[in-house]
Length: 254
Image 1 (tube, rainbow, N blue to C red):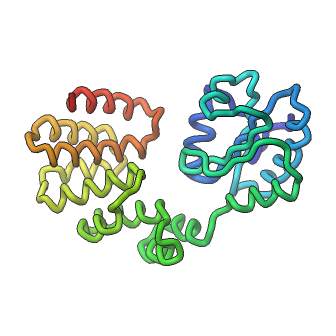
Image 2: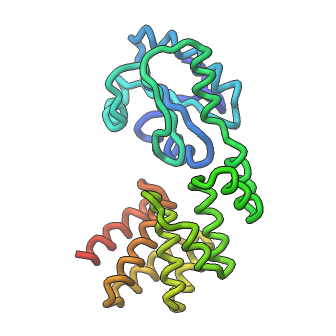
Image 3: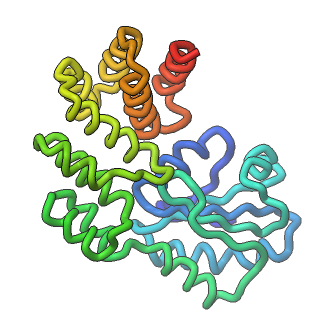
């Protein structure tokens, strides 16, 4: 094993959520599932570590010893090693199994690097986000970021057109639900949405829970549910606040 660096580090069950899943929302994280007894793992490891170190600051390599972390290996369906999985936005975006030549490792890492659209999204301003969507009309992060800007700027109709259909993107779907609620003249929800924008998630969720409990309209209740699920997604699956409000939401809907 190489010493830990900024680009290459060991990870286990206790810190996988933070160092891989959460970190992958900021940059790609490649996970090398390996074992000490595995010859092909030792053959592949130097190429992986070299590729990650050459791209320090743009991609990271997390190394998981499958013998010490059998639950992680099972959770991510590791059936043979070495198994290499790249994570972006909290989920696997690319993978391969078995030792491959160094040149193929380099190509694998190159495909993970940010595109021009990704770099524009990182800028975060409206012009950059619109340009990112011109380059890649399906860029999910650009849609989410621009949709949020439009909502905070008082343009819920344009935000809704941009964000729907969300196609499995729960944060985008939550923002779309927020846009519909705003268009339905739910001015009473403005404090909840302001709290969401200020990252005061506890207050935002509490106010949305209160609105759900008071609502008798099925459509409004569903929109409130979707908005809360969007916040849960933003917080991450392991967040205690998200877990608490998920339980409350489930109880309220049953």
